[in-house]
Image (cartoon, rainbow, N blue to C red; front, side, top):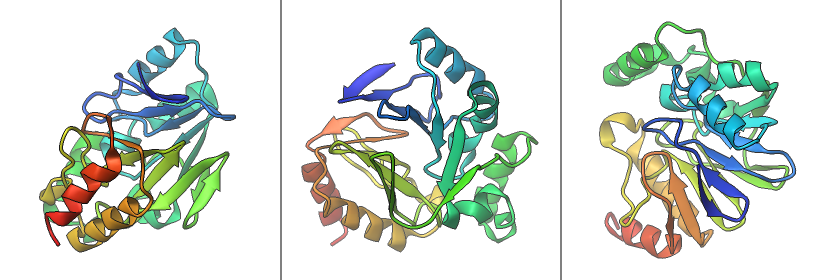
Length: 215
């Protein structure tokens, strides 16, 4: 578990999609790894003496939502997700997905049932001081969370030394994804950490370079 900002941690137990932990008034896990990573994340949290009370899913992809049922069961945490993402999470929208995306969802959820969501979040809102920002594109109901100058970006973009767009085969609507990134740039974030890239400060500068690559 790495500290990347004030009351902000990045977990290593999620595998190739890193969950984050906001240690605010309500300890909140952001994303939950794949279906097989729930116990690993549980052990990492226990080893640090942390008991989460809420899980917020940035979107419904299996490497972000797969472990949430296990963690909900062992911690009692409330699971939240965007209402616009509901068709992806409850699987009613799977038939309309591109074939590659649909196959990925089936393979990585490993036959497990749809993740349980206790609370659906509508539009831009704030949850115990955490700003919830709709960022459609990668998925229809993707959200980014903002906390004390940092963006927890999920798959809205890939952070690191050089910010990049999420790979095209997994981004459902590229134009919307770019509009979402432009909107995030307007927030002038200090830092950003995505699920598949390294945390980075000077996020505004890095996002500006990314946006200029398609303008």
